[in-house]
Image (cartoon, rainbow over all chains, first blue to last red; front, top):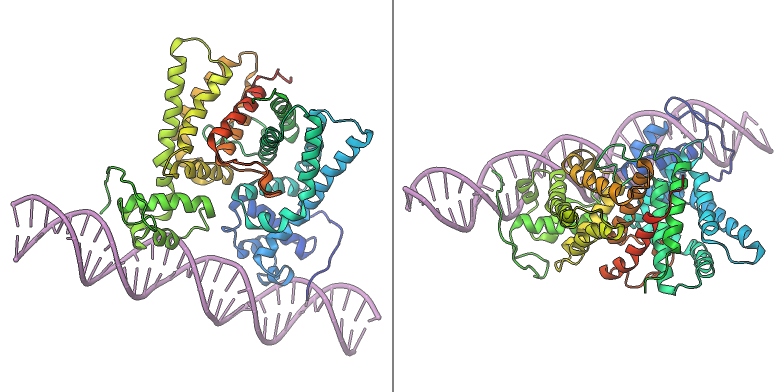
Length: 228
Length: 228
DNA sequence: GTAAGTTTAAAACGCTTGTTCGAAGGTCAG
DNA sequence: CTGACCTTCGAACAAGCGTTTTAAACTTAC
């Protein structure tokens, strides 16, 4: 009745990104891109299946529903991303000493950067989808995924406490809020100003350039003396 | 055939925010809120007209189409907001000397803050709508409004150049990008972390609290030495 | 070979969508 | 009152939506 595939990831670059790789993966890849470009509601199953070169009924056969497909698009990448961040934290904290703010920021930057440089562009698409879904405050993120990935926030909350012991809990929460908000939006390529004037930031989609300018800004914001 | 109303703004607080004020305004107010809560595509005209207490056909009669309604929701508030920012810039630059970074940031913060404190909550709704639409990269913002409000970006680009003369053009563009991205998201209340753990930032919706913590962070990021 | 699991095809389901239409009501000038 | 104009109303429109169902073809393993 259902799929249970853990197949390899073959290179697919055919005309309509169809043909190669199995049906489920093709659906996931196309859905990931279309959800970013048009949003969840404005993306129809017929658009997805048509561009993926599969039958309309395939989505409901493999995933059950459009909502479940959306959740599958997320779980495919979010788990590994957050696990990568926690692994970075583990490695940096191995010595037992407190991390510098820059080192702490980099434990998030590195996995996010790796995802953004995914040669199949699927990773970069996902970062944009994540940012978009966060802003849209989707029920999927509030309900299903919030419990699943609370370890991520707990680990970073503790690490920030140790890295910035001079700050109170409330001030720290605000700064984490600002820092992650900025990093998510930067990797998603949400250029607020380019909408008003064209190509304000050249090569804004080069992930290495993002990091080069983003990290000093975030670190400076986090390190500034307490305002209270 | 069409409306041409420039009426006053009566206080409306009836059971379903209907009854008082004219039909167009009621539609705009409800649409503003529903577009924020559910997004453009997921908000149907029937939801809007029902909550506004008007007939379904009223939207197409007064605004022409759903797209035109969305544009009207925007133009009602965006123009005054950006004009307010430019007026602040004019006032601060009156002396002829270069502005401090903090003063420059405050020329944007003050009008945005005033909008967020709109007693009818419509202004706060609009800031969230603006942020959401920026992330969604809506065609309306790319096409219609981008030409209309280019003065805003030009004025701020020049002001930032004068306030941070040590920075190159590219680096400056990045910092403006980060600063505005952060400020837009902060006023929109897009708390990235609250989705993972509940109530991470208490009273996150108090505009004064946002400013108190946001301004030092942004100013520090903008003021940090060049990374190149 | 048989059998099970996948995929395609085509059609239809009930439902919601944005939009349109003509008639009815309201207001105000003449 | 009459006539003109603006506004509202209920009903309907075609189109698209997610989903389900039928059946036939294909692949793969035993």
